[in-house]
Image (cartoon, rainbow, N blue to C red; front, side, top):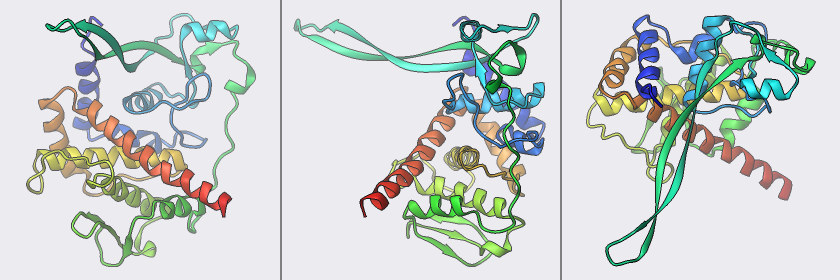
Length: 299
């Protein structure tokens, strides 16, 4: 691509952070609108992942879209619809590898995988006319429940993580490999409790026996610490979207934003890396849920 997509996306996230906005929380801060909070969806209903979630969430807020569905100009045309004249699309990214055969000095052929990334443009269905009616239907509103969320409780329990309650701080302890949480009743809302737990369980996935994620952290507040906190923040946002929860920005975000800005300004690929790690962590936690369900059926 002619434009530097890493720099373009990074500049966008930095601009939001400098305004004090957490791009990944914007959908909730703005009510998003009168439906469920979910990840952006492709034309076939499959959710986007990684950096594309952040970009399309931000685009929805900026342009006031309620629908979560997005598609290309060609996909709209194949459905007998058309993008309205004058509408501008949003860039999303596709990453993969190509295999190239190379001959070594000894005459042997070696297969080498080369990573690549390309961008393409998508439009929200609210920018498109003539689509089948189901694309325009709004989901039933979710009624907030002041009690524990059974789906979230089951999801986190299925991970098998050791979660202890007590005290007034939330953290993951690598030494004892457990998550510490204040008691449920001490949180402002059930959503705040589950969002915090999602954040700490994203940290839990970094253990060497799990995803073995290490950014070279040596002390509190250094660059490695900031990178891991960014991964946990994004991982919690992804999980909350998957579980239909509505997290709130924490009191410590102001301090985090300063360290995140430094990381992002020093490395234009950092937000892509963080989003990929966060998606990997979310997928890892989801796998426990499917395994738990299989065990239940077997039993």
